[in-house]
Every structure is written in structure tokens, then in C-alpha cells.
Image (tube, rainbow, N blue to C red; front, side, top):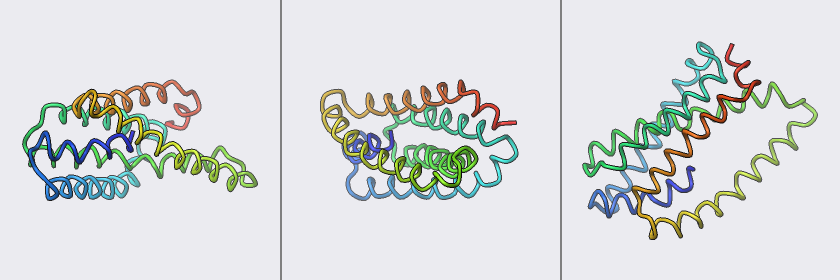
Length: 169
């Protein structure tokens, strides 16, 4: 999902917002600021509502926060929307790691985490290739709709995982 967004963002900045390198850099930077703040705030949020519940809510919110990008043509409003999407988008990382540490036995963590990282890194170019083919065919708004849908479907799927719901208690 993140890779697809990264492929579409420069096109969004130039074609939809009618900007250039400055607007693209601003959007990229503000997303990173949102992710950093979201990670810090998430440190205190998850224990209060439960790690599993926090992951599901962040995924769902991430999907909803991408939806306005389908219609936004104003740079300041796009900056706000992307900041908010960043706020919830990266906060899941530490929470997911927390759950992995609870589930994976210590003697298997290096192999398990190495395998997860390898899969994640290996799939990014595939997603970028897919986005690179799809963006010219369907346009940036459709790609952002797919990103939103991807987050919302992920949230719905995660909400159905029994062990994840139990970790919310």
C-alpha cells in the first residue's frame, strides 16, 4: 500500500495539484512529520486501548484519511490530509512489533523477523511495478481509492483475527 502511494504521489503533486517539485517535496515531508508524531503519540495511545485495537483503528483511519485525496486540488488541504494520514499510517509499526515479540519464541525471532523483512522488501518493487502500470491506465484518484480500500479491507481482516482481538483487552 505504501509503495503504491509513493508511486502516485509525484503524479498527484504535478497533475492534480498543478504543482511541481516543491509541492511534491512538501507532501512527502509532511507525511514523514505525521508519521514521526504518530509514532510518538502511539506510544501512549496503544496501552490505553489495547495494541490489537490500536492496529485495527489505525488501519481503518488510514484508509478513511486517504479518501479526501480523491477530490482535493488545494495544496494546503492536501498537506493537511496527508499529514493526518501519516499520523496514523506509521504508528502501527511499533504495535505490530510488540505483538510479534509476544507471539514468536525468543529462539526463533531472528529468523522470523529476517523473513518478514525479506518479504516486505521483496514485495515493494512488485507493488511499485503494479502501480507504475496502473497509474497511467486508471489515474491517481483511482489509485488513492485503491490505497484507501486496501487499508479498510486490511482493518476489517485484522478485526476478525481472534488473537489480535484478545490482545486488545
